[in-house]
Length: 406
Image (cartoon, rainbow, N blue to C red):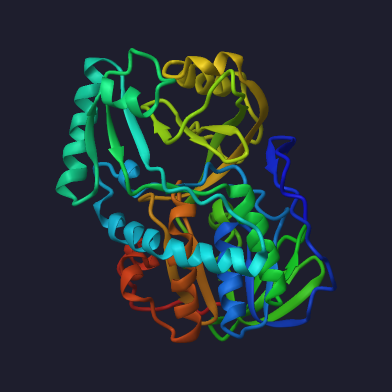
């Protein structure tokens, strides 16, 4: 499996992931709809727990958001007004990442470039400093590790930054991974555990019987299962797959990103760096990933001149060395965003589990989500750390008569 090169196909970033294709089985203990980060993480953990698992993907592994992401595990830098309910889950999942990393690397033989250098959140000018001070106060009130830095202290940590950087906050507990390597490792680990991955096979409908789900209907026929996991990312909310009562409030938000190739002459970064415009993540292979736009434009693919300009200008504003860096790849993807920007992890009906809506925190929340999915399948209940992220928070009060699913 070659995971060394960054490339683009259309507007997608790829990772040289090789899938061993075979015949789609007539039945599995578990069917996972979606071969993204959440789907493959859940499939791998379920297979380790002894289940036969088939993953069915409408496109290719990681095609929606997983290979388009930056790979941030940054609960402190991400924390903002309104996100208090998500913070305990974020911190719980970050605490689970070291074990998840060790077991994934051992199962796959692929290192995932797990880095613990922390995040620098930067401000330029008085207005940005005032807003950053507000965010820092919120981080401290929420018990997060976040240290205020002067401009000189910021540049002592990152000498390549412009002198105009006025202040910063150092979030020492934030980590990061390389999404290409994580996805390649998950594909290999899952298949080694017996998971069957089927690409280019959209799920056209769920097979309902007596109010529960008994499998999925695809162009290749019916595949029966004891449990179906809906982990289709931004496509989880598409009309037609679920009855109106269970329609998931999930929509796509397009994000455009690019990869810059650093050299000794251009210099690089030692930490993830955030501004109000962009975030920048240095990777071990010598690239800096710059992301990401937030565009509510539906499933419109591709990269735009405006999007790339915003990324480059935002990066150049703090890091002058990018002017000499080669733009090696550009891509876009679709974040799966729920109405409250938090994941939906729940049993929707007998035999049907949802794990979707992770917005921009998919990588951070992957270990906890996978463990929660295993708990739902094995014991039928969410673990304590995921209890606040059920589908019920979006539902209207139940009516007297309940519709039977056909």
